[in-house]
Amino acid sequence: MKITHVEPLLVDRFLLVRIQTDTGLEGFGESGAWGHLEASATAITKFGDYLVGKDPQLIEHHWNVMLRAHHFTGAAITGAVSAIDIALWDIKGKHFGVPVYQLLGGKMRDTARVYGHVKGRTIEDLVREAVRLKEMGYTALGHLNPLLDEEEDQPYYRSHAYKMEEAIDNVRRLREAVGPHVDLCIEIHRRLTPPEAVVLARGIEQYKPMFYEDPLRPNSGDAMAWVQDHIPIPIATGERFTSIYQFQALLTRQAVQYLRPCVCIVGGITATKKIAAMAEAHDTLVVPHNPLSPLSLAACLQVDACVPNFAIQEYPVGSPGLDGREGLAGENMMTGLDLPVDGFIRIPDAPGIGMEMAPDLVRRFPPKPRRIAMRPHRDGSMVDQ
Image (cartoon, rainbow, N blue to C red):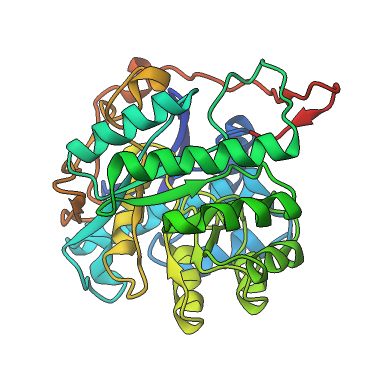
């Protein structure tokens, strides 16, 4: 079996890849470089020049060549590697007629616990969405930003005391709204300084969050380790990481308790399985990141099925008030996933990653490029959001 064609597919707000073989089998993957999909598409094309004519089953070999041939990485490149890696696993599973998890050692669970996204520009919006998802059967809620999801063109400023008191009170209101049978996955979106991260974490400890995600920008493992060493709740981070070695650095510093690898940016299924093994050796749990299309979710679930230290899976259900939808983004572009039931989703068991693309995908779902923008601060600088 030989690869005959590697094609990037810019569809809607996603970048997929289709890899075709001389046997008629084809595989699909996705790049998670969502801010720079055009650059990642170019990288896919360049890697395609290397891959055409080669055996698609030599996944580890190709993974190493793509990452080590020139030793240049970054999100656009590792997003391309991730998309190709997922597609190669998809082809291999289809070739043997088994789901990918069978090739990774076999599944140890039939379903994966998920947490649904909750978004809101006001605390009233957040509480309303949290209650709605609880009533739908979710046992965990994430994307919960106590700093709120305000408009990005609205200049930002709050005093330290008010910023902390408001965020702490917002977590209190969420906990009181859903009770103790729903876990809260608090998401900060890299918006705090190390001192702020410590104050906020200590303030919300009493509300027993499952984890405290991305309190800082992903720049310094030492800074994250300092924060984790000074707070009583576990940190989750890693969704912006593009290398297994960034995770290794955090683990050796004891800077994280929940790893958040993005299967579509860190190097695909191959890299995510390596990261999960490192985490297992450090008694650390894995919460795969997934803000993308259902294809990304399907790839995550194949890993979730066979990872002993899997904790919970991100499930980016829409918040109608912000997203204009209730289901998954791109859910009409592909099929193969069940809906969650009582907070758990069935692991797909069709060959490969278990997804089928809608006919005429590219024509029906034209690209929607993302603009470059940051929220302004009142002083004229900018803030992460």
